[in-house]
Length: 246
Ligand SMILES: Nc1ncnc2c1ncn2[C@@H]1O[C@H](COP(=O)(O)OP(=O)(O)OP(=O)(O)O)[C@@H](O)[C@H]1O
Image: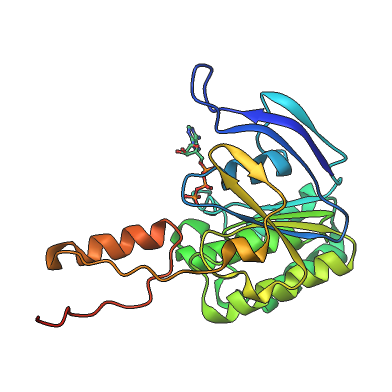
């Protein structure tokens, strides 16, 4: 799949969110899209998945089956887990026994067994995320797009993500996954892209991501807010300690 000179903005006179994005994703490749909050990772993934259309440029050779897992599953729908997955399977051309087998396989694998008949809107965020993951995998996708898939997932399901990514790529599918935290360790052989200042760098190397420790003193009243903000910006907070009296 190839991105040719993609430009995107959310409104006619708005600033460009992404400019001149050019890149190629080979079958079987895993690409981790890095960048701080608001950099444009989700926008890029939605352009890749075909959820958004570029204002200029084009996406060429997008695989026919795209599995799209948004950052937040749209749970406000009048279905139970099983009804929803049945509908999504039908949209993907699955029916009869093979459909039921695949649905049951993913329900079991993602630990959704107790939620088969639960209305989507009453699911916890993490459980709803799993339903979002399941629908994208009912048919092995030629392109799997995962937007911050670790958010809200329990530890056991988090460990499943690298496994699932490896299965999709082994079958020749490409995987694009965004990650603003340090969660990518489990993905082997992944290429890293960096979105910053509206542009995409595809030649990001591990040297660029080597960490440096910065010590910062903040007022006691600001600790929680500062820690939350640093995390939101993709930094790892290593600890909080009292300053030693001089
Ligand atoms: N539907 C929308 N309408 C208008 N602006 C939007 C919309 N979605 C995103 N934006 C803006 O586009 C920019 C890029 O957002 P995007 O969600 O792609 O970033 P991101 O890197 O995925 O961030 P995060 O890690 O927080 O998900 C941000 O300034 C955001 O506010």
